Length: 628
Image 1 (cartoon, rainbow, N blue to C red):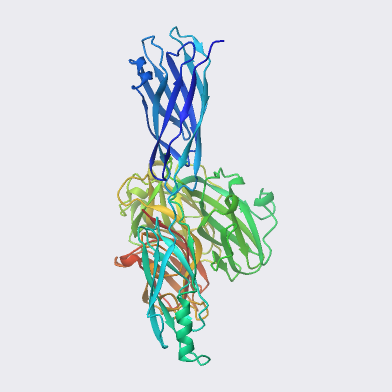
Image 2 (tube, helix red, strand yellow):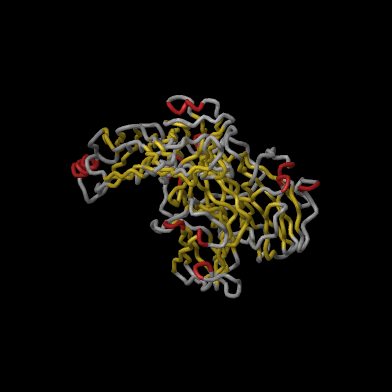
């Protein structure tokens, strides 16, 4: 019986972020093949093709004179063709070598590479049957560092006093590593966690002993000494680097009756005190299962009032954060970057009965695909202002927008120096309606008008909402308003193809409260009281918070909330060390509690500044950061 030619793969091994080679071998069979073609399929979230070359050495080199080409024809398919004018049969042995890059931060330990189709022909051009046997790429996961040292000096103190502690790892941290610290000390203040930066092996922190009437100095000293021996330490695995992928703005869910949504994405309304899961990849918005965070706009229509609504990754503990508030029962929208949880789902909790709308404009996933975009932060800058006194003209200035009008804004032609490579913008949209504004919607120029909204202002007065808006034709965006209003547009960064100077990836964090100036908010020092006075600026040292923010972060994904006792004209946040910008982050002219998402570039020392025009309490949360 004639033996048919057979192809097989030789698997390789390498670490995440490194290149790995996969060899393609031929067993010629009874009738040698003179030309070959095959397709290889693989996980594109783990591997990306670097190159493919014909192997002209070894026994297979007897077919010299052949030419070879290996090219990616889709995200997870590479096609190789070996052919030539001569009729030499291709000999036994290696015929090609393919080089793949393993995605940085991949948690896999192995991934298959398989033949999807194989073809061969003999010297006369007749088709030959040919088989293909796949292989496996082994991913060498680096050993995770473990706690190696934990020493406090002095080990015993008489209160009140401070002891400085050093915690060390067995090897350099692969990326920022959070160490959680728990102690049985009854008379010492121990940090909840400390962070060891990427490529570092140690960090220091302080333990404060306190004077209490129920213990003697000797007892307190002994307690503090035992603290150095009784820490419970866990290492939090770093989140992988993610990049942004745009989507046509799309409504994911609407719990109102009669709006056409059903099942997990439709009625009933959210009940008071209830939590509901939304399986995002199962929606009608073409969200892939590879998405690891979502760029959303969340809108509530409370039945009466809504203390707060919180969104977070399904499967994680309920966080001490909020996404938005509607104390007066008005329709309120807020942008939110929400990490994906179990099965790609997010959980939403409502303190009171409310309907809920969720829109999406993009998602964050592993880099490596042609559509992947990096983030480039900018000094906050005003793009447009249609008010007569705003100082803008032409396409970026007056007149005010009329009811039912859609206006095009050529963002890259503004004075903010936004490059033509930008494919999405991180904006803050502010409306100042003549009376009230049913809704404002923004979307890419050239795309169909979407069934989504960006903000609602049924009470009137200045109201802002952040939005990541994909760029349309010539980089332009469209803005539609249901009622007469002025529109103000600010920008803090843009998304463009990676590879240019300043490109950043996104890293998710467990949603965490960074600061709260309220007397009962539970924060202290730089992150706690007092209430901010009108006309003051405050510096927040982000790296010193208890949210595990690494010192590599160059921009933060935040949710800012103002709780003023009366009218507050505006709040602005920007990087420490830069000039106070002519932009705003949120407005509360009616004295209402207002939340707004904000991507804020990091300033000197990683710090951000926050200015308030009027007296107010503020609290803000973080869900991720941007870093190289």
